[in-house]
Length: 341
Image (tube, rainbow, N blue to C red; front, side):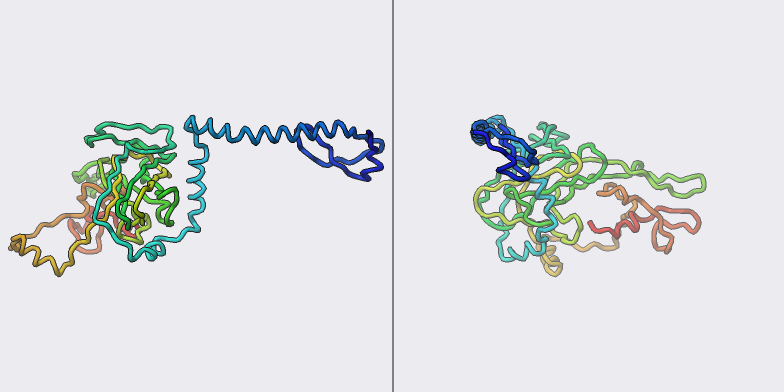
């Protein structure tokens, strides 16, 4: 049967293609449609859609069997993009102010990871004198560990790491618990590099002024907590974990790092100052007599930032060493200490 388009559809109609895509076309005088062809095209379109629907789970199974999880990294990136809407640590910790702080330690061997997305991950044995397997994590990707918690409560997370060569910036990571960022501060925390003076001996110019020493990296193994990068919360951040199985994921944001282990535990609160004299008496400590040891700040051997180099202060002769005419490096960092962190 042929139908005159001009008589049945006055101005516009839709043309059907075998692929099942519809789009409007303007009818022209004398334009004809063959209804049998239209029916066959519709059947082919339905068959195409059914084939696609049936193929999706098959392709998904193939990808899973091959270990391909294309949306895992994207999931973490999407969560980090939404970090601005998360509650901060003050609000989070208020909700768990009565939660216990278990006196136990959970140690995770870094080499026992259960998932990762790094293209350059590698396990090193006894790296730089640290026994056991250490995992190299690049600056793009994530690594996940499974952890079994025997006692629910709040736990701090400590990382034993080595700052491998990179771009000389602080190492930045985000931490996810069970695939979620529990609070905003967990979305960006830092592991410091270690710096030292290029020359520990004081050098001077031809005028007798102290020169500022250059700063170079002096990497070594360090254990650092997941902490507030801005410095508004001095104590290590605590994460609430229920009893049972959990996952801990580190997402790299900047710089590579070698990781040996991750520990979940709570630092013991130090005794108050008023309690210390009695403690010293029990330990048999004696008071010193006529003894003073002066340590100059500018002679610091190691520091966490290259900006904490020796500088000069002429404000008072009480600042040592001092010279009325020549520049003497007699303090460390100066105004650089104004920054939080």
